[in-house]
Amino acid sequence: MVHVKFITTQNLYFYFLQALLTLPGFLVLAKMAPAISISLNDSSDVTDFVIKQGHGVKGLSEMGIKSLPEQYIQPLEERLMTRIEPQESIPVIDMSKWDDAQVANSICDAAERWGFFQVVNHGVPLQVLDEVKKATYGFFGLPAAEKIKYSKENSSSNNVRFGTSFTPQVEKALEWKDYLSLFYVSEEEAAALWPPVCKDQILEYMKSSKFLIDHLLQVLMKRLNVNEIDETKQSLLTGSVRTNINYYPICPNPELTVGVGRHSDVSTLTVLLQDNVGGLYVRGNEGEDSWIHVPPINGAIVINIGDALQIMSNGRYRSVEHRVTANGSSNRISVPIFVNPRPKDMIGPLPETLANGEKPMYKQVLYSDYVKHFFRKAHDGKKTVDFAKITN
Image (cartoon, rainbow, N blue to C red; front, top):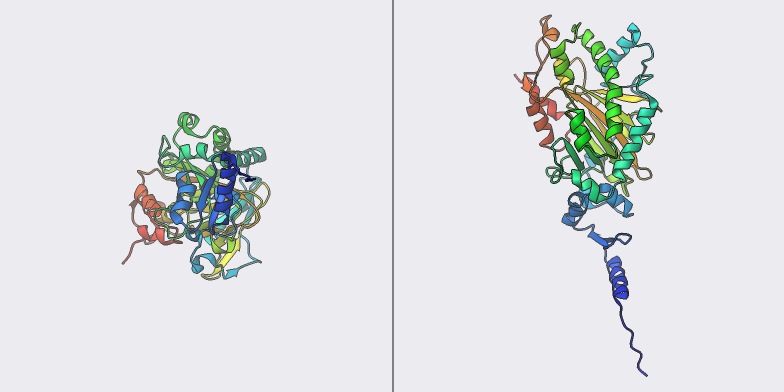
């Protein structure tokens, strides 16, 4: 007797999956229907999955990949931090006595020496910070089909952008990070265009941080002999605001890549909320290879000086290189608020900084030109500020 084995559609699908799984470099996301298969050896396949389909590196991480796709492997010099200073730390400033001269001096000293500091008792409710963290997980927990609605190709506004890495089209090696960038125009636009899952929490975080930002700038300006921040100065310092929510998923080979490469921010100030995972490093003062970890402190907010304020202070305040490492065991999130000049503003040393005959180190540049220069290239340390330097 001849036994005939019929191959049903279901069996055929099973055999197809089995065959794919035996191929080197292939991954199948079997839980989804239809199944998604990508070749980790094919950079266009990975790019399509991560960027065009909106899965991000979070999608790769959740597939359980065992090795890093080649386009995420950073050059050795970008990965290594040869000197991590375990005994060094950036200042932690207690802001509970807002008007104390000693607090003001600590803020200005930190801005001059370190370019980074953490603040506690800062007036931003801890519940607001917790809610914005939850909202960040809420957005990145959305299906790819929802997140892709906010990508460069699909977003209804340039002010709302979901993406991955930094500038993938010009980077030789990609960074292990997904993000949502939200440029604030008005509450009405935010209500209409920002993702519903996180818009209210981000708006509340921005509103709650305003007093802290204004106070820090008043203190920093006073040391520059700007005794009053009038409407024109206020607009120059804080005329535009952008908030990012960042997601750094678990990485199979964290030692081979970076979460964010070496760079300084183009902002006036950056107000950063990080979670309890850690991984933010800033360039130290003890030579080129010196790096200092910024340890998470419950309830603290990290403040750093941006290029715009370095330029406006004629180099007195420092914007400092920083980077984020990838993590092999935990997902990490962060939420920076970038406080910036307006795109149409000219930035250069403030007249008050030159009143005593100090020579200007920077020329006047259109802020939008400065920002375009920053985003035209991959992260490259502090090189962006050269765009505004006066060269002899």
